[in-house]
Length: 272
Image (cartoon, rainbow, N blue to C red; front, side):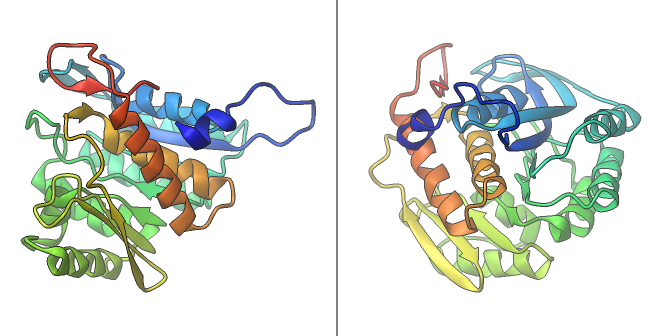
């Protein structure tokens, strides 16, 4: 955690600006992913985090046991409660849960003019549990991707979003272009499980950038996608450009993987 540890929030003088971001995501009972991982990441980056819980999951490092989606009106109420009392400099969207919540989230982002939107399109868990149904995908593509400053799918999620098979780096670039054509400003396709070299591919400002993951341990770690998108929103909400935010977030996740803890009996948990 090289960068994050050096900027951890230790207290501020009255009147000093605090960067505030909002996480709209699901709750993970094992605290390795979702809202819990987001808050821990925000803390390490010295950012204050608000939370809007879309789903409550019962899960551990082995599997997702149960899911309860929060009613859309309660999702809306959480967002309004935050925004009527404070401003936010960025929003991370993770697991959405209910199809109607997509409408609510999109409306609130537009109505309040929210900026620095990071969309992590969580479609399924590491154990294969479906979080985002196919009928829901069209709404995400139509209503949330066009509002996003950056979308951060993994290979499988990029394939589902675009309907394209990704078997090499060119395929990843084509998928990134397709997602930008849906309206996203930038796309980061996570390549930790790619068969073409474990490269995270960023498309921003019309240019491609490649981040190498080859030196990272391959032991499975729970919640790295959530941590990555949370770290990115901390960066862009703090004034960094998209490239630097992604580079710093990827370094942060690399450290998390290398130092992951054996909390449960299956996947490891990032030490944040």
